[in-house]
Image 1 (spheres, rainbow, N blue to C red):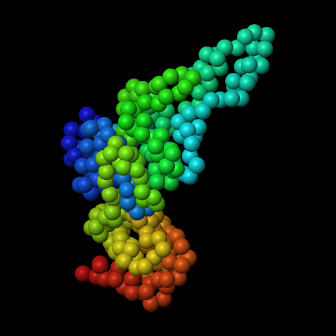
Image 2 (image 1 turned 90 degrees about the horizontal axis):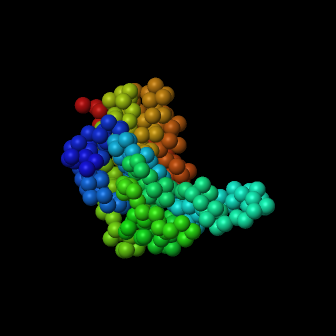
Image 3 (image 1 turned 135 degrees about the horizontal axis):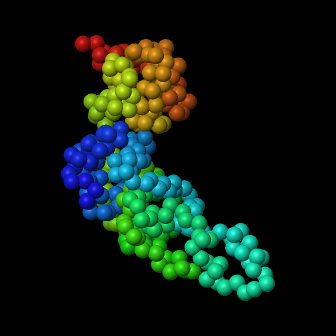
Length: 293
C-alpha cells in the first residue's frame, strides 16, 4: 500500500507543494490503494495535470506522461520499431542470413510511455493527459491496457505489467468519453477551489508573497470567474500572476499594475478588453476591500 491513510497522502502532497481538497485526496488514496486508474475531469487550469505530477513526487515514483492529441497512434503512444537500425543490421549481415527474431529483438524496440509504464520494474505514475483530445479509436485501444495492464506486440507477444503503474487520466470534456473507459476508472471532478483554499494554495506555491497581495490576487481572480469571459482563469493562472506580481516587488494591487500584468491571468484579447476601465477598477476595489479590515 502506497499510503496508510488519506491524511498521510495529504501530508505527502503538501510536501510536494500540492494542496488538494478532501474529495481529491480521497480519490487519489483509493486509486493508489486499489491500484485502479483515476479519471480527473474539470476546467482547464484547475490542477488535474499537477495532481499527477505531485503524486509522482509524493510516491518518489517516475512520471511518464502521454500527451494526447487528435491523430495519436500506437507508434507514438506505445511502441515502434527502429527501422533505420534494423536496416543497418541487414546491410551489415549481407553475407549471411538475417532471421526475423534478430530484426524484431528488444534492442530495436522504441518504447513509448504506455509500454514503458507497463514494462517498468520501478514505481511509475502514468499520466494520460487530455484523453478527450485523442480519437475514439485510440480511446478504445486503451481498454486492453487499463483492463489487463498488458500490451500485445505481434512480433514479441504479450507483455504483462511487472507491477501496475498508478494511472491518472485527465479530460477537459471537449468530448464525452466512452462508458467502457469510464467503467475501468475511478472518477473525480476538480472544480475551482474556495477563496480560502486558493489563498492557501498561493501562499504554498509562492511562499515569499505578501499576505495582502495573496488575498487580493485570489479575490480578484475569483471575481473574474464570475464574468462572461471566453476563458476564465484557473488556479494555474492565479499562481502565475502572483509570481509575476511578486517578481515586480508588489505588496498589493492597484489598477495600474493589474492592467500591466493582465496577460499573466487572461489569455484572450477579448477578455482583457472586456474588463478594462470601469470593470477593472471595480474588481480592484473589491480585491482591496478583502484586506481592508
